[in-house]
Length: 451
Image (cartoon, rainbow, N blue to C red; front, top):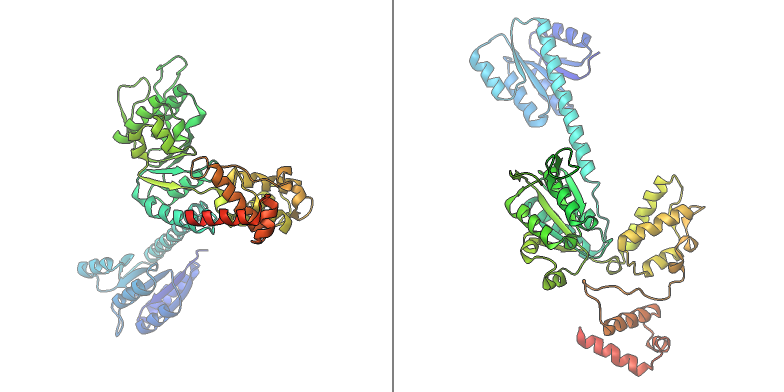
């Protein structure tokens, strides 16, 4: 049995009955009417997959029905039937979007075939739409969870620059999510249907790095038994993410610079350059300014890659995101381990939000995964956290904006933390700090003057 909703419109009663009988027998859900005006009303009230209509009718003709379909239900296919078969009318109906044109007297087999083809086209449209929706859902999986204003501003910038195809440099500490950000840029770019290739420049020596990026021809060196495409060529049409770019040797930086500038690579053993069409996203957790000043990283390559710079803040700088991310990782790992852990106790969450996370988001996920694995009930409690969190009494030392902070900055941060812990009580804070209240007051005044 066929499927589909079919509207038949013909002011000739016998022709209408014949068509209704044949199409209903073919398995379609048929609605039939002799009135063009009623057909317009039916199109207003319910959708049809195919409309089979006579062209010449009194008051409302087939062209008006075709126009109504185009306006209210553009996916509906219209098959036109007429006893006034002329080339001009056939051309006009096709121009207006009719699926097919059948001349009277028609053969019922011909009508059945045309309606079946129109229904098949409708089904293909639905399948294509479903596939597009699946692709959009897949693209939507590249999500970055945050309620932090700074991160939301970065995401907005990422969405703006993603379609421009310019190169992007991502900076920030290890574990802040630079690769996820790179995937986010790719997913929102015009290259999203192409490959996303991620490569860690610090994981290989210079020789292997060149081979991985640029490839080689068979016989280029001992053991090269076959041609090998490099990652630059494999990523052509898509995005190449180069993580830890500052770990690349000066000689390799020269080779990469040529690839970025000329949009071509020269595989080892070849004399013919291979064109590549790649969008570069690079990342580093090092102080890029220090690398430039020392000459460890070339300025010309830096300017090629750093068209747009996005600096990802440390997790300690976006503490409001810790509960949000913790719950996300909890749901993910509970599902992977087939466990019913669905809660983090307030005491455990308090420890998490007080911790500085030197390993950033990656460390947070590791801690939550560990907690899920150890939990025997439905919640992660303090006992499921690592010992250094349970005994949290000192702050971790960390870089600030890529540089090592001064002793005064560390002292200032510590004093502010103590004040926060005691609810702003300066007398109590001074006692904990081991200084008198006047000394604390002077330090706070100096900090205010520096702001």
